[in-house]
Amino acid sequence: MNAATDLLALYDRALPEVYGYLVRRCDSAATAEDLTAETFMAAVRAVQTDAGKQIEVGWLIGTARHKLVDHWRRSGRQRDALAELWDEHDMAVDPFDSPLAVDAAHAALAALAPVHRSVLTLRYCDDLPVGEVAAVIGRTVHATEALLTRAKAAFRTHYTLDAPSGEAR
Image 1 (cartoon, rainbow, N blue to C red):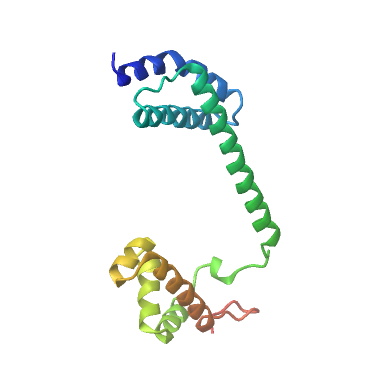
Image 2 (cartoon, rainbow, N blue to C red):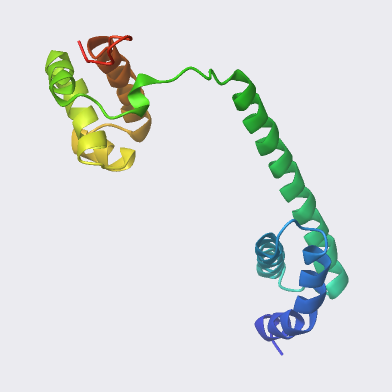
């Protein structure tokens, strides 16, 4: 038998054990399925890098344990980052969450530099992803993201709302 056949036989034999180990420790079956797939992909990579490597169920369970710990660490970091964002989030109403006044938006766009006007139009009117906007304007994605940030700030300075009436000025 070759390594691929051995690995397929091991997969058939070990899948219930690896998945069973993970599903009891995960918050959802989908997470357990993803981690099971990652575990078996690690086995494939291990066999590819070391053709003589013998993978057994114990090795797979150990790898699954490592994948699970990595998942918990990522989840914890994400939870901490979201909590930090929530704590710092200003609960004030952003006037740009509501629809814009068309005439005021056109006037604000007209006041912008042509590159700002074009990048905002491509991104938000034409609904292109940032990568496609970058390709159209001939810049890197990173440079386009920075340009969009500057363009949005410029738009905000030209488009303001009167607080009492909500009318654009």
